[in-house]
Image (spheres, rainbow, N blue to C red):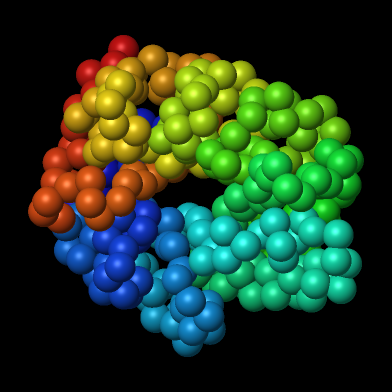
Length: 272
């Protein structure tokens, strides 16, 4: 099965099946019928060339593609990339080259960044310095033909629409964004507010659903108005993937992931 959206693709993150080993998760999702993927790597060995080549070959043999790579060090980026200890920052830039190289080998066009956490104990970097470091990461990524894309993440500075707006003001087209619906809800902002901040710099979406009482659900089980969201993204020329990203606790059987994708297909195909 191959998803047949006009001007869009629905895919899935291997993170949905965590803690299954990444290659097993990918195989299960391929067997379900998914063809477009975000790979969430979970350890050092999973960014080795042989491992990346194996996953790329798995997907390409089924006519699919890997579009994005999610680092397993996202939770440590404050310490690695955005602290005041400059030697660790420089070392971490070199380590992130391994992600960019892995993404390029996989055929992915972007690596996802969480960035700097909010903290009451440790002062955040000045915004200009944050953007300078982001831009340096992005410049390294471009050496590999890969974009570093800032995700909105609860508990990180990127949860705040004003922070995202300032990134756009300072970096213009040199910053691209990943919209995550559940992360906006957790931070107390509507996806529309996050989109207002990201504007037409959004290039990737983590799609999920929510209700008043649950902040992460499979698409189709909550209150998200996907028709309205797609209409808005169509208006800014969005042509990236819609990557289903939920947690393993959010469903009972793997087939439910397929049902969620088919729900999205029905919603978007019925949209005029």
